[in-house]
Length: 150
Image (cartoon, rainbow, N blue to C red):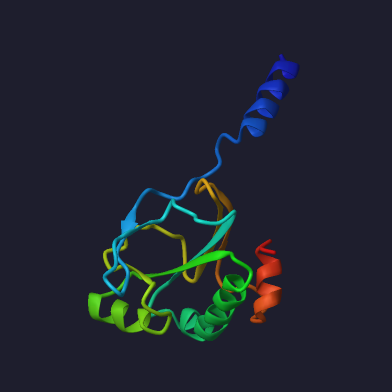
């Protein structure tokens, strides 16, 4: 019996069951471009960063997040910032600090457990790593390495 249970657990792990996927949720951008589907990743790996205007840690991380996005863009790795969990005016105002491609989640449709929240996903939208809170460094290169992004 134990062998069968062990085999079943091994097969489940090998098949990737239980691995989370980004939702097919579509969010508008600050620039009012066509909505972007969160589960779509145009590169091998993507970084999704969820922040909220009322979060002091998010505010403190704004500069390092923008530096990380530039670092990743120079290496052809997609990144997106989602601003949400607040009133429309506050969400839009804070989103301006990240640029016109920032996604707006004014109604909190994408549920995260804490902000800031960093999610690394693959091309299929499968979550590779999720990190709630601010990582131990603010250097763009060290952040990329921490998240497993080349």
